[in-house]
Amino acid sequence: MEKRKLGYISLYAFIYVSIGALGPFIGQHLKAIGFSGTRIGVVTAGGTAVSILTAAFWGHRYSASKDKKRFFLKLCVCAALVSATLFFVKGFWLFLLIFCALYFFQAPILAFIDAMVMEDGQPFGAARMWGAIGFACGVFLVGRAVGLLGLPPIFFFYAAGFFICAVILAGMIQKEKKAGAAADGKEAAAPKEEPRSKRALLSNRTYLELLVCAFFLCGTNVANNVYFGFLFTRGGGSVAGIGLAFMLMGGSEAPFMAWSAKLAERFTLEKTLLASMCVSVLRFAWYSTCPSSSLLLLFFFLQGMVNGFLLVEFVRYIAKAAGAKQLGLAVSVYYGSVNLSAILCQLLGGVILDFFGIGGVYLFFAGMNAAGVIVYVTRKLYRAAG
Image 1 (spheres, rainbow, N blue to C red):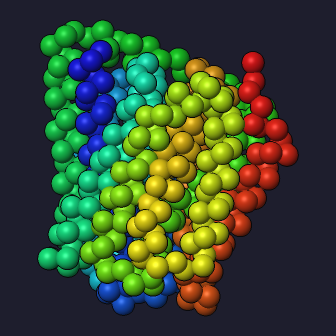
Image 2: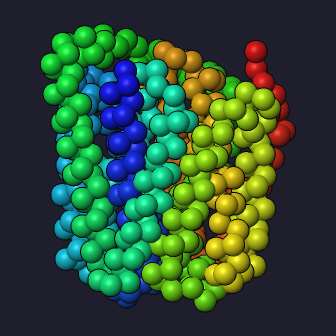
């Protein structure tokens, strides 16, 4: 169990090293090769759209797989190989096509690692915390490298993180083979009740209301990775400084993730989640005033107060509402709702950037978050269910 826990921690760390290497810098790279704000929004939203369209495709194959870790390994290798080709591409349509292909392989990885950890009985918050640490390290180191080498190598750094994940998974598979086929037998015996699970989820009022809240709240955090660089440089910061900012902000998520279980135990996860939602509204409303880069660095911990709780407690609330038998499907659909929201925020964010500047983008994000809080409160989702 401890070896598996270490394996999951390593996977979270390097998956998010890759995401930290690409997400915060992709907007700046696209701007540098001549893309407008609208085209940046189309590219980033296009990748997210693919992740929604392929959710059922990958979800079915993951559920039917007898060796989920080997399945996971193949996704990591494919994502790494596709990303490396983007280094050579500067044309809009070809870049959009390959970026969408990248998300075809990357998108299911995040949902499946969450589901695997919870299905294996591992402490989700403690494992997910290492994703925040990996993101912080990735964005900082790549930020330093960008200052020396320029932006195009971000795709190779991204690929390296996923190749390391593939190596870790190969090691986990070998250890399980030596230990016997018990783990594989457990995975192969997973219940195949997908049609009934779908119907049950569609009739689960609390679960559906949480998906609506996720749509208004979580997509803005995905889009923030793309547009924060514009806010930071607007406030006087450098492109290399974006790496430092994201290291501090991403790193601040880790202690809040570690505390999330204790706070949820004391105040309930429902109320802890509400508090992080309210902080998210205030944070983006403040960002809309275009503060200086120094102030953004000074208040780096705001991201930890939001994502440190939101990323952990939302998934735990989803799992609680859906039940253990529907966990894999429920988490996949939740990520679908998040990705649908991310498409809207990335696409409209690019258009708003062209016409109203970065302050308008974050005012839009604050409005989206406020709508999510209103739904959460009016539907009384902050009340702990027995």
